Image 1 (cartoon, rainbow, N blue to C red):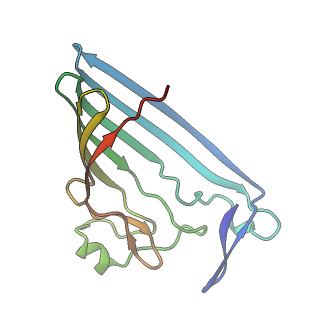
Image 2: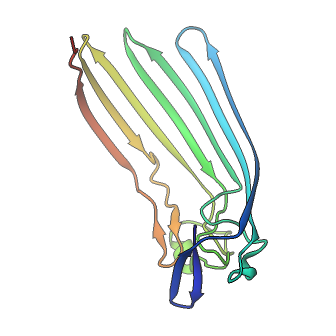
Length: 182
Protein backbone atom coordinates (compact mmCIF):
# COMPACT_ATOMS: atom_id res chain seq x y z
CA UNK A 1 0.00 0.00 0.00
CA UNK A 2 1.31 3.39 -0.96
CA UNK A 3 -0.13 6.89 -1.21
CA UNK A 4 -0.23 7.37 -4.98
CA UNK A 5 -0.53 10.82 -6.55
CA UNK A 6 -3.63 11.04 -8.74
CA UNK A 7 -3.37 14.75 -9.56
CA UNK A 8 -1.93 17.96 -8.09
CA UNK A 9 -4.32 17.92 -5.11
CA UNK A 10 -5.30 14.29 -4.61
CA UNK A 11 -3.52 11.14 -3.44
CA UNK A 12 -5.03 7.73 -2.80
CA UNK A 13 -3.80 4.57 -1.08
CA UNK A 14 -3.22 1.90 -3.71
CA UNK A 15 -1.52 -1.45 -3.95
CA UNK A 16 1.65 -1.58 -6.00
CA UNK A 17 2.58 -4.44 -8.26
CA UNK A 18 5.98 -5.05 -6.67
CA UNK A 19 8.85 -3.43 -4.78
CA UNK A 20 12.42 -4.59 -4.33
CA UNK A 21 14.11 -3.98 -1.02
CA UNK A 22 17.79 -4.79 -0.79
CA UNK A 23 19.90 -3.97 2.16
CA UNK A 24 22.21 -4.82 4.95
CA UNK A 25 21.93 -4.41 8.68
CA UNK A 26 24.78 -4.57 11.15
CA UNK A 27 24.65 -4.34 14.92
CA UNK A 28 27.61 -4.28 17.29
CA UNK A 29 28.08 -4.02 21.03
CA UNK A 30 31.25 -3.74 23.05
CA UNK A 31 31.43 -3.92 26.82
CA UNK A 32 34.12 -2.02 28.69
CA UNK A 33 34.46 -3.53 32.13
CA UNK A 34 31.34 -4.31 34.09
CA UNK A 35 29.49 -1.03 33.72
CA UNK A 36 30.18 0.59 30.32
CA UNK A 37 28.71 -0.42 26.97
CA UNK A 38 29.15 0.96 23.46
CA UNK A 39 26.65 -0.12 20.85
CA UNK A 40 25.82 0.82 17.32
CA UNK A 41 23.70 -0.22 14.39
CA UNK A 42 23.60 0.60 10.71
CA UNK A 43 20.96 -0.14 8.09
CA UNK A 44 21.46 0.27 4.35
CA UNK A 45 18.03 -0.05 2.79
CA UNK A 46 17.53 0.38 -0.96
CA UNK A 47 13.77 0.21 -1.50
CA UNK A 48 12.52 0.82 -5.04
CA UNK A 49 9.34 0.23 -6.99
CA UNK A 50 9.88 -2.45 -9.67
CA UNK A 51 6.26 -2.82 -10.84
CA UNK A 52 3.75 -0.03 -10.34
CA UNK A 53 0.82 -2.13 -11.48
CA UNK A 54 -1.53 -1.23 -14.29
CA UNK A 55 -2.19 2.36 -13.22
CA UNK A 56 1.18 3.35 -11.75
CA UNK A 57 3.73 2.49 -14.43
CA UNK A 58 5.49 5.85 -13.88
CA UNK A 59 6.55 4.80 -10.36
CA UNK A 60 8.97 2.12 -11.57
CA UNK A 61 12.49 2.99 -10.41
CA UNK A 62 11.28 5.46 -7.76
CA UNK A 63 12.28 5.11 -4.11
CA UNK A 64 9.65 3.87 -1.69
CA UNK A 65 8.58 6.84 0.46
CA UNK A 66 9.67 7.11 4.11
CA UNK A 67 12.57 4.68 3.68
CA UNK A 68 15.99 6.34 4.13
CA UNK A 69 18.91 4.77 2.29
CA UNK A 70 21.12 5.04 5.40
CA UNK A 71 20.09 4.86 9.05
CA UNK A 72 22.56 4.60 11.90
CA UNK A 73 22.54 4.68 15.68
CA UNK A 74 25.25 4.83 18.33
CA UNK A 75 24.96 4.67 22.11
CA UNK A 76 27.30 4.91 25.06
CA UNK A 77 25.83 3.72 28.35
CA UNK A 78 26.87 3.36 31.97
CA UNK A 79 24.80 0.93 33.99
CA UNK A 80 25.44 0.34 37.69
CA UNK A 81 22.37 -0.61 39.73
CA UNK A 82 24.13 0.54 42.90
CA UNK A 83 24.32 4.12 41.58
CA UNK A 84 22.49 4.90 38.33
CA UNK A 85 22.04 4.16 34.65
CA UNK A 86 22.97 6.80 32.07
CA UNK A 87 22.84 6.64 28.29
CA UNK A 88 23.66 9.05 25.48
CA UNK A 89 22.62 8.04 21.99
CA UNK A 90 22.59 9.50 18.51
CA UNK A 91 20.40 8.55 15.57
CA UNK A 92 21.24 9.65 12.03
CA UNK A 93 19.06 9.36 8.93
CA UNK A 94 19.89 10.13 5.33
CA UNK A 95 17.63 11.64 2.70
CA UNK A 96 14.23 10.06 2.28
CA UNK A 97 11.28 10.89 0.09
CA UNK A 98 7.82 11.78 1.29
CA UNK A 99 5.91 11.16 -1.93
CA UNK A 100 5.52 8.43 -4.53
CA UNK A 101 6.96 10.58 -7.34
CA UNK A 102 10.11 11.51 -5.32
CA UNK A 103 9.67 15.15 -6.31
CA UNK A 104 8.16 16.99 -3.31
CA UNK A 105 10.58 19.32 -1.57
CA UNK A 106 10.94 21.66 1.37
CA UNK A 107 11.06 25.29 0.13
CA UNK A 108 14.55 26.83 0.23
CA UNK A 109 13.46 29.60 2.61
CA UNK A 110 12.05 27.05 5.07
CA UNK A 111 15.26 25.01 4.88
CA UNK A 112 17.41 28.10 5.43
CA UNK A 113 15.30 29.16 8.42
CA UNK A 114 15.82 25.68 9.90
CA UNK A 115 19.60 25.89 9.46
CA UNK A 116 20.03 23.73 6.35
CA UNK A 117 22.48 25.61 4.16
CA UNK A 118 23.40 23.11 1.45
CA UNK A 119 20.34 20.91 0.85
CA UNK A 120 18.03 22.08 -1.95
CA UNK A 121 16.77 18.94 -3.67
CA UNK A 122 13.55 16.95 -3.42
CA UNK A 123 12.82 14.87 -0.34
CA UNK A 124 13.41 15.21 3.37
CA UNK A 125 17.01 16.14 4.21
CA UNK A 126 19.04 13.87 6.46
CA UNK A 127 19.57 14.72 10.10
CA UNK A 128 21.07 13.54 13.39
CA UNK A 129 19.36 13.66 16.77
CA UNK A 130 20.76 13.02 20.26
CA UNK A 131 18.91 11.51 23.23
CA UNK A 132 19.93 11.33 26.89
CA UNK A 133 18.46 9.25 29.72
CA UNK A 134 19.32 8.76 33.37
CA UNK A 135 17.53 6.62 35.92
CA UNK A 136 18.11 5.53 39.48
CA UNK A 137 16.55 2.75 41.48
CA UNK A 138 15.49 3.73 44.97
CA UNK A 139 14.84 0.52 46.81
CA UNK A 140 13.25 -2.49 45.14
CA UNK A 141 10.06 -0.92 43.85
CA UNK A 142 10.80 2.73 43.13
CA UNK A 143 12.71 4.31 40.27
CA UNK A 144 13.23 7.96 39.32
CA UNK A 145 14.13 8.95 35.77
CA UNK A 146 14.94 11.85 33.50
CA UNK A 147 15.06 11.84 29.73
CA UNK A 148 15.68 14.27 26.92
CA UNK A 149 14.90 13.37 23.33
CA UNK A 150 16.33 15.51 20.54
CA UNK A 151 18.65 16.96 23.18
CA UNK A 152 20.08 19.75 20.99
CA UNK A 153 16.66 20.67 19.52
CA UNK A 154 17.63 19.69 15.95
CA UNK A 155 15.04 20.84 13.42
CA UNK A 156 14.27 17.95 11.09
CA UNK A 157 11.49 17.46 8.58
CA UNK A 158 8.97 14.61 8.50
CA UNK A 159 6.72 15.82 5.68
CA UNK A 160 7.10 17.98 2.60
CA UNK A 161 3.63 19.27 1.78
CA UNK A 162 3.01 21.11 4.03
CA UNK A 163 6.54 21.36 5.40
CA UNK A 164 6.30 19.72 8.81
CA UNK A 165 9.05 19.42 11.38
CA UNK A 166 9.57 16.51 13.74
CA UNK A 167 9.39 16.59 17.51
CA UNK A 168 11.46 19.37 19.09
CA UNK A 169 13.42 18.79 22.30
CA UNK A 170 11.24 16.70 24.57
CA UNK A 171 12.10 16.34 28.23
CA UNK A 172 10.47 14.07 30.76
CA UNK A 173 10.98 13.33 34.41
CA UNK A 174 9.12 10.90 36.57
CA UNK A 175 8.81 8.20 39.14
CA UNK A 176 8.04 4.54 38.42
CA UNK A 177 6.51 2.34 41.06
CA UNK A 178 6.72 -1.43 40.61
CA UNK A 179 4.14 -3.57 42.32
CA UNK A 180 5.24 -7.15 42.97
CA UNK A 181 2.54 -9.65 42.08
CA UNK A 182 2.14 -12.80 44.16
